[in-house]
Image 1 (tube, protein in one colour):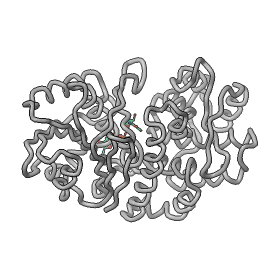
Image 2 (tube, protein in one colour):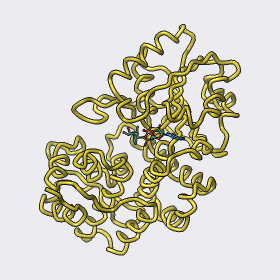
Image 3 (cartoon, protein in one colour):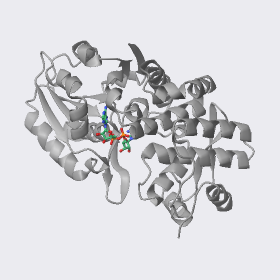
Image 4 (cartoon, helix red, strand yellow):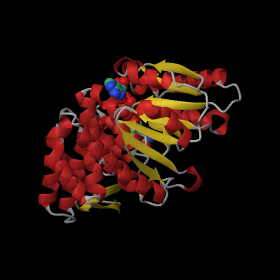
Length: 365
Ligand SMILES: NC(=O)c1ccc[n+]([C@@H]2O[C@H](COP(=O)([O-])OP(=O)(O)OC[C@H]3O[C@@H](n4cnc5c(N)ncnc54)[C@H](O)[C@@H]3O)[C@@H](O)[C@H]2O)c1
């Protein structure tokens, strides 16, 4: 078992990483100052079915009054309707005795539960038990919570740090392989943005990761959390520029995700986005083509796509213009200067972006 701290003054919290952590839940909750807190445990139907035993461990915690909320799986659950329903549940559960919310699931359950915890009574404590690789290496770290609005993803949200993140590696054993690969995209991203040594390790161990080797996945989660925790500690509210570095591949990726009508899973779209960002970095002479090829090879080894099919270029450009990461209509990209070193670049010529996309998008009319 290892522990990484997100250092945020009086909002600091540990990310605990290890196997069968539900057995240690009482001690972990004590560390988080929630020894006897009543716990509203939120999950989705697929996680509840796949991880019944681990979930039972949390549901039947000695010394805690608990209740379980099981929501439908999928992005649609990050809705105003589910948020409102969850508020009803926590209001009914809360007896004024310090109730907390436990998010037991992937990024969808984490974002919705965290946002509910942020809003109810202007903020109650919450605990993240991420059960997808993507949530363990990314979504559960940093306190960004949100639900979707019909006009845009993650439009309604709040910063609300959890009291503790419990990354139980045992939960990954039932993760569908497409979800595993989606999380691997963010792992590769962490190597590219901050840590060349870690990236080299990823290159060497990807086959074991795909075979769900616990030691390799634990290394990926620990190294990724260390990188993200450090960046979040320096720029909690995404105002200083540091946190934006985590968006490597995301400007292209989100636009492709939208333009392809969500036919690509989030991590798949980010993988294509990273390939585009790598190409653009080569085009600008920021890093050698050989580095871009190494990243592309790591993504391919993870079973991820590096080009988009059935996607209209014009729609990608349009989606990019509407991206909330653009400032005053000026584009903003995170580009690579080497493996382990990325920087923000603004206001690049449209023609250069178009050329980059042409190389990665197979157009259909
Ligand atoms: N808050 C943040 O900083 C942040 C960062 C990145 C992504 N996100 C958000 O995270 C969401 C995506 O998260 P995700 O990829 O974890 O998706 P998800 O929560 O939808 O989980 C993916 C699928 O895997 C299933 N699943 C989860 N754990 C399982 C397990 N252990 N065994 C079997 N099945 C399991 C779920 O039921 C779901 O069907 C998006 O909404 C995205 O916006 C948030």
